[in-house]
Image 1 (cartoon, rainbow, N blue to C red):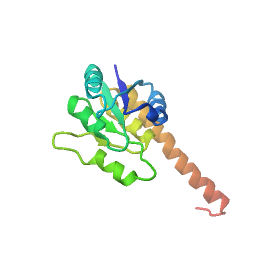
Image 2: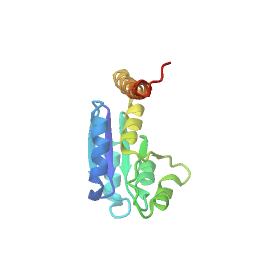
Image 3: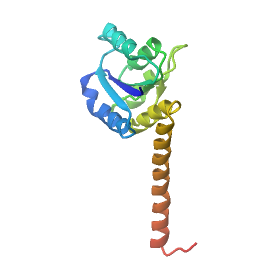
Length: 162
């Protein structure tokens, strides 16, 4: 079974999580969304993540400000962890440091764009799932086609001929 577990630091992150969940489910991968704070409910988080730490699982963590959640989860599980922090308008650069400056032996990855965090998660799961890799390749081909089509339309509209 492949799945992505999205763990939010608080319920205010639900809209951010929804973007990730929608992008993951578009590939046919199951999503589980939970809430737990490394600062406020560490025992709850440990229980959650250890219960989901199985082959075929990737975690995506969402926590802003002091993002201890991503590194905390990574230290508790053997599965990959992707941090996708929602950056605040006032402190975005400062918020980011807690997601990228990690202690030794802790390797959560950081992807800022929610749809890209979803893509990274499914690419990891695709390492062991040929069908998923094929769906990813089809998505990438469609994205490339958009660029080529936009270029062709611009070239045609500007009267330029190749």
